[in-house]
Image (cartoon, rainbow, N blue to C red; front, side):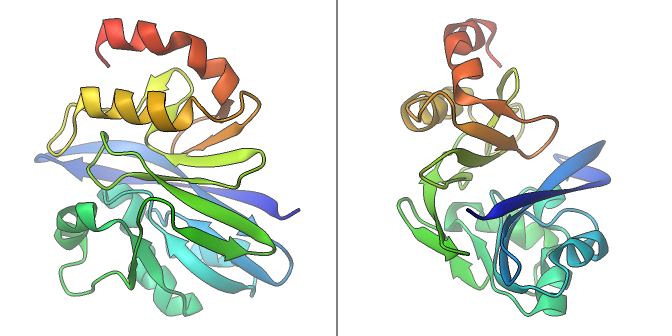
Amino acid sequence: MPRVDMVRTAGVFTLDGEDFDVEDNIWLLGDDDEVLVVDAAHDASPIVEAIGGRRVTAIVCTHGHNDHINAAVELADRVQAPIYLHPDDRMLWDEVHPDRAPDATLSEGDVLEVANAKLTVIHTPGHSPGGVCLYDGVSRVFAGDTLFQGGPGATGRKYSDFDTIIASIRDKLLVLPPETEVLTGHGESTTIGAEAPHLQEWIERGH
């Protein structure tokens, strides 16, 4: 079974004219020969170090916010790998990388393969229109900023919508096996089983 490595980088998240200091989780799924990178935040160098010379099959952006894509182009150039993004977040991508398009698009049900693992793309709009999660079909979901320990990703900014993210979480993530580990874009990991009982609380609090 492929292993998962995590790199954490720090930087600035910028949206709607405001800046926020953030730490991002970058996830690497693979074996000794090849690896897939989930998000490329802030600084390509520690990601390249974690890759360690392995062949990179894809750099998958879970969504287009700058803190998840701002190192993607440099990383792609350094490791010669394609960048994947859902087309509904292209406007966010273009704010950061106006002169370089992603190499490939992501759609609901797409399957990405690495190290004998298959990751199914789950389109989970709400935090952003083109937000996606990646499910390995066994025990892990790479959730980006859709679901965290303690609730859904933020929806107080442009292109985001609370009702939409609740529907994405309820209909597409909470239906996964309860033991599924949720590998998040920020903070600590959680499980589907730990979060599912709190859905109504999130709806009532409105965030």
